[in-house]
Amino acid sequence: MSGRERLCAALDFGSWSAAEPFARAVAPEVGMLKVGLELFAAEGPPAVRAAAALGRPVFLDLKLHDIPNTVEGAARSAARSGAALLTVHAGGGADMIAAAVRGAGPGVRVLAVTVLTSLDAAALDAVGLAGPPEAAVVRLAKLAVGAGAGGLVCSPLEVAAVRAAVGPGPLLVVPGVRPAGAARGDQSRVATPEAAVRAGADVLVVGRPLRDAPDPAAAARALAAALPGATARPSGG
Ligand SMILES: O=c1ccn([C@@H]2O[C@H](COP(=O)(O)O)[C@@H](O)[C@H]2O)c(=O)[nH]1
Image (tube, rainbow, N blue to C red; front, side, top):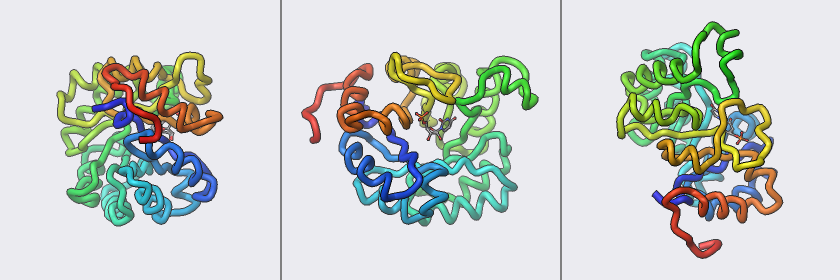
C-alpha cells in the first residue's frame, strides 16, 4: 500500500459547500474521503454521493449504536448512499454488529469503533471501563471481528496489540494521528502517522492536521511521503 492509499481525509465541515474545496484539493493526494457526523447531519446521503464523485471510496463514519433492528435498517439505508465503509460502535454488542453487517450487505465493509481515541484511562474509568484502554480495545476488537466486522477503528497506541489479537484479515483504521508538534486538540491516545503505520495501521484518518493546514494538498502529500514504505510520486498525479 502506498503512503497516499493509506491516508483518509476527514471532511469535518458543516456543509458540502464548505467541504467541497478541501475535498477537491485533497482527493488526488489520499486514498479515501471520510464523511462524518457533522457533514452527514447537515447534508445527508448527497454528501456521500458528492464525495464519491471525486473518485475516492467514501468512509461513512456514523458510529451507529442502537438496538440491532434499528442498526440493521440504518446500515441498509447507509449502503444506498454509496459508502464503501461504515462504522458502528463495538460497544453495541455482537448482535448489533452482526445486524449492521447484514444490513450493509456485501458492498460495504463494516468497521467497529473499539474505544474512542478521545478517551484516556481516567475517562474510561469514569464510564465503568476500569483498567488500561488497551485491554478494553482488544476485548472489543475480538468481539467485533467474531460478530463479522470487516475492520476495526482503534488508536495508534493499541494497533499492534489489536493486530496480534485479530490476525491479518481485518482492516485496521486509525484516527488520533498527529504529525510531530501538531496540536492534539480533544484527542487523547495519539501518535505520529509514521509510528501508527510502523505499529500496523492500514489506514490513517486525518482531520484537523489537513483541514486546518494552509495548503491541505501539500500537507497530505508531505504526510504520505513520510510514511514508512512510501514511494515518492509527482505532485497532483
Ligand atoms: O475513535 C475515533 C473514531 C473516529 N474519529 C474520527 O476521526 C477524525 C479525526 O479527526 P482529527 O481532527 O484528526 O482529530 C474525526 O472525524 C473523528 O470523528 C476519531 O477521531 N476517533
